[in-house]
Image (cartoon, rainbow, N blue to C red):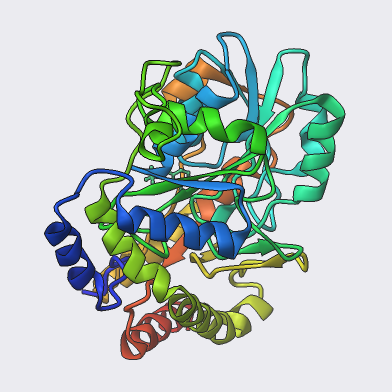
Length: 376
Ligand SMILES: Cc1ncc(COP(=O)(O)O)c(C=O)c1O
């Protein structure tokens, strides 16, 4: 069976995890956490990067940091993972969904302004498949209406928009190191990128259960106390050790994924030219990280037929999000603004192919030939 995904493994993970075990410090903010955070701050240019247990936790931290209150509204696409919405619903917000663009499946930047009301507090762009949202337009709207921008860059580490790293353009960015992502912290993990210097001190406090323990550990205060609301949003250093092995190999992982992505693209181009499938499109402003390779079929029946065909050939493929606005919690906690022109139809015809760092050339060839034979 060729799996849809396998967590990336580069080889040094166990050595670094053993070293973390031997250090006698396994909790958060140990040596490996510092290495990972500094690497990301330097590479991406964020003011402060804080490792967290998950992107879900990072989004929750962001909602606390911008003080989301009951009745506030937050604008995001409906075509996203539940955590994008849940983080704000947990603070009492109403989610306002807007349609996606058919080319990238990212929130359509031209649909946002009409969804803004006097209750709107934030826009949450989700960089689907590691392909950038149209951030210039989103940041201009945020400035005009004084809104926060929280980038859900769960899939976006190592991608850029006009040369700027995803996750560093909004006021706050959130990465995921779940095992399905390009880099993993042993299965689960995340990072909060604080790009607005004014938020850094409070971000550290919220992450440390509402205390100024980070300042205490740096010797800036002689005892730490309860300062604010907060929770435990630290990643264990054992997990950071695993992540560090992958960050050291980040360029190699990225290049390999891009190679795999391009091979799919080139092999499937003739099918696209015949109008049998639609291939992903990459806006010129975006340098992507090959987080995923998807194709779009004519409709959900065609997609199911292909899923069954591939399964018969022992190849796992996967569709993706069920739009949030048509799910029970989405109906309860949100509303869709404007017309759902693309969200539902595009989500019903999208299919993801196996793409992971350790996918062998032979297995990729098998995926491609099975797919081509379906259309033959
Ligand atoms: C767009 C998006 N946001 C948030 C998340 C949540 O990430 P995590 O599993 O690290 O909490 C995911 C996970 O798949 C995601 O795809």
